[in-house]
Each structure stands twice: as C-alpha cells, then as structure tokens.
Length: 273
Length: 262
Image (cartoon, rainbow over all chains, first blue to last red):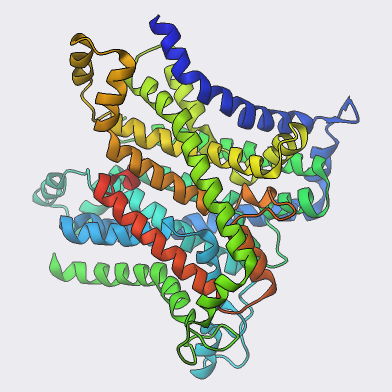
C-alpha cells in the first residue's frame, strides 16, 4: 500500500512535467537532427560556420563574462560589509537587495532606458556639466546590455554571498589576528577561501542568467543580438523553426556545460576538501 | 575596525545607490505632466496613472496575467504539495533523481522553455493559447512551490503526524488536519513567491501571444517599443508597490533566509 501511495503523490506532478516540459524540450533537441525526415547536422554546421551567428554567440559570452566578473567585484565587498552588520541593519540591507530581485525585469530594464537614452539623465547631466559636447551613444549597445544585466544580477550574488559569509565563524578571523595576520591577510586567507562555494554558485547564477536573459538585451541592446533574442527572432520574426531549435539546443548545452564545469571547480576548491 | 569599515560602508552605499537609484528615478518620472519622460519631471500630475486605466490593452492583459498567475498557482499547488510531501516525508529509491526532475524547470533557459512550449504545447498538442499560458506558468511555478513547501516541511516534526495516526485518524485526515495547518505560512509564502515569478515572467509568455491574448509584461514591452510616455513608469510604480507588499508578507511568514540560501 505504501508504495502505491507514494506513487500517487508524485505521479500527477511528474506526468504534468513530462507532458509539458520534458517532451517539448526533448523533441525540440531531437528535431534539430532531422530535416524532411532524414538525419542531418546541417543546422549546427550552418551555425558554427556562419560568421554572423558566431559573432552573436561570441558577443553573448563576452557580455555574460563581463557581467559576472563585475558582479563578483562589486558584490563581494558589499556582501562582506553586510555580513558583518548587526541583525537589524543586515535585515534592512538584505531586504533592499532582495526587493529589486523580485521586481519585474521589464521595469528594471526600462529604468535604464530613462537613464542611458540619448536625452536621458546621464547625457543631460554630463552635457550640462560640460563634460561632453554631444550625447554619448550608450543605449542600444552591448555596454547598455551589460549595465542592465549587472543591475539585474548584482543582488543575486550579494545575497548568495551574505548567506555563505554569515556562516563563517568570526573566531577564525580572531585566531588569524592573534597568530599575527594583518586584517587584510586574514580577509584574504580566511574569508575569501571560505566564500568560494558561495562565489561559485553565485557566478553560475549570474553567468547562466546573463547568457539566457531575454528582456534586458531586448530592451537595451537595440539591433545588437544576443543568443536569446536571436532565438526569438528566428522563431517568431523569421519563422525558421529549425534554426530556432538549433539555437535552443546550443543554449541548453552551454548552460549544462557551465553548470558542470563550475560544480567540478567547486568540489576541487572546497577548502573542506 | 571602525576606521577601516568606513571605506567599505561608502562602497556599499554606492552599490545600493546603483541598485535602487534607477527604481527611484522611474518612480519620480511617473508624475511627469508632459508627454515625454523626463528627469527631473517638469511638474506633478497623475494623468499617466489615469492613462493606465484608459488604455484597454493594459486592463485586458492585467486581467489575463492575474488569471494565469492565480489559476497556475492553484494548479501548481495541487500538483506540488503532494510531491513536496512525498519528497520530504519518505525515503525511497530514486528520490534525488525525482527531486532533480521537479526542480529542473529552473535549469532550462526560460526562452528555450517558451519556444519548446510554443512548438509542442500550442502547435503539436493544439492547446489554445490561453491554456498554453496556464500550463507554461504552472511548470514555471512548480519548482518554487515545491522548494518552499519542502523547506517548510523539513521544519515540521513528523512525530506529530505519527501521534495523530496512532490515535486512529486516517492518513488523509491527518494530512489535512495536522500537517497542512502546521505548514500554512510556508504555503502562503510559496504562493506569493511563485506568483511574483509568474506575474513578472517574460520568457515563456513572449511566445504565447495571440489575437487578444497577452500578459501585462509583454504588453509593456510592446508599448515601450512604440511609445516613450510616462505610462510605463506609472505601471512600474504600481508593480513595485505590489512587490514591496508581497516581500514584507514573505518576510513576516518565513524571514528572508529563503533568498540567501542556495
């Protein structure tokens, strides 16, 4: 009886996911190897030899990498500061970091259109200060995309790191100090290595998130395509479903490679061994 | 310590300025009386807030978004609560694999999921777009529902359940009268988190639009591409108010540790 009961609890959800997620995804991947009924790798060959397609892939990887590095550099010190605060202040700052994370990505990207536009806040301030002579063209470039993505994902890495740093025993820092390490050395030798697991999880979230983000590149990137907007363009505008499926498969493969590599790195670097 | 932390405090202040400044700017510009978004605004007016209610597409898509998020949430609860219970209550073969399957929707890129669903759920299974939206959002919400409720169940002492069973209550009765009331706050938090995920979703919804059917975020995207008046800023403010209220309730129910744990 117990076994049957267990299956009854799990089955509805499992069936639902199989029908509406597993089969559609599996069939999408499978469909990339067939065209008009016969086996082919045409789509992949096309993607991997067309310089325009490769440039989109390259831009996407570049934007994601810069976003990830910027998020680490900006997020790490902030997270360290927050993790050292008393519970009340920490709670407030965490809430202020979580709030943008829960806010619509359309709203957050749109706010950067107001700031970065030709007549936007940034340009009008710089112009009136006399720092520039004609408006900077930032909106609708990869730079705008990166700013939008950093804004999108920075809270994620901050709260992930705070979660890890909170659990570092403060006595370890004291011990390092009493053994003669300077504050900075103690930070470098104790806090940084012990934060590595959080750093890796955070980096995966940011990198994969930027790699697959749609709204921000669609609003801030202008004509500059990244892989997700390229998928949409092929599927909806160009109606080339075979190519769209190829792009979808490439996105899944890259996502899983990144997660796999980072997990491997995490086990290797984990100080607890 | 104090001395050294001053630089770090300043740095953190600028980080938060970067994170929250744009949201503040959007809020201020929503009161612009003119037809073009400007910062600082040239006066004070609520006309763009009124405009939201006058543009029929905003009201229509808001309704669709609400229905899809609420109905999808309910469906995800019906599918997710039993699964979360089974996964946290019992030990069995293949448990971690099943756990992985139930969490997997968050691993697949949203835009890929949306495209695959358009291709199979709408075209191959021939479900109407509205049903496709509902199904897509249910898949999207399921991992959040399961994760939050499972973590709530992990704090539940199953000895209480055993006690109820040994006193003669049936399994189902025990579940509804003993287990469920004990994880009530977890369930409400799960519903709110999943609702925000669904209500704000673009990646899946962008593939599921058709004659007369679209969600609010997609309508906002379309609007931004064509107009640059403060209407979107006004909607943004309303959305941020809803988000803030939800976040406060989630915090009350289970603290913010859900967000910092990975």
